[in-house]
Image (cartoon, rainbow, N blue to C red; front, side, top):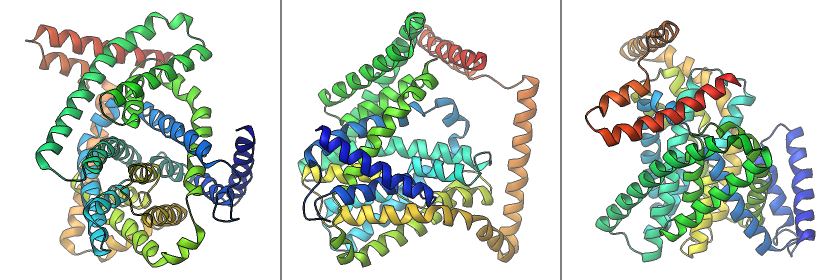
Length: 454
């Protein structure tokens, strides 16, 4: 096991360093490292596939746990319309595209559904890294883009649960599926409400005893406990990790936990991406290159089309809509997780996995260059747009700018209606509900005050 870990880490480290020098995402380096140590390139695997797969499964849990830690209810509420309409438009449109591509390739319904699920999610990690490296992290569109990615992550976890249910029964039953969705929604609400009432209070009580070591151990224990709870309830372990991350995101220690988890997440996430690369047969990429090109084109043009439309319908300016959509032109970690799920359940066509991984590599490589083309494309569109469309673009720009100025002035004057006041007003006739909401808001308020002091 130590030998395997040594080979894996030194290969991943050297290759990722090379990719950093070439100014490419290190995720691609990890995948290439997986190809190098895998069984296909040199005829035999340099490491034990079973060990790497086990570490990779743990890596999935830590990645989803950390994604949950980045989830902020207040941020999502503040850009709710853009996030909801944008995410649903992208997911719905890309799933239709993906399902159509699967059917046109004569795949069965099960494989077409899995393919649709793989193509509808952009990579949160790659998008945010590309935005940061492009120097756009302070741009106005980033807030809406982040909220859309959060909803996509939530939908991805739910989609994994639904695909698992469909794959196990090998049939698609509408009533049963609706029942599964309802059961999942009730379970999520129960977990989140109980967690948000108990865990923040507990952490506040023991805060004086929490050094970094104790906090990280306690957080991992809570994460793994929720993973086991999710499995016992009949849901995926990934769902449990993600939910516990969401719960801890609403505590006063969230940023501290996130900072402590980052090195651990990076290590196991690297192992996960290496395990993905180990499943790639280079010769199969040559065999399926037409399909890879087709999938890449579907991802790029589909994300640009549905991303732009969704953000525009959600109320963003055309410029911000195009900046958002041009940054979403890749698939990433959730696509690999869904593909791995299909493999583990024995329902995924063996040809799909290398096609998806290769498409992810190509689109990830192209993302920074496509992002740079967003402003020239917007200028071209605006210059050649019909008069009516140009007038709507100008009108939306003025409306968003006025709303932004109004929000800033209200915030400065202290006249902004607080979330706590709205919640108390909404439930003022229900004593028990009011108590629950007030306790929830108290935890969030104390978290905010601690962050301001820091």
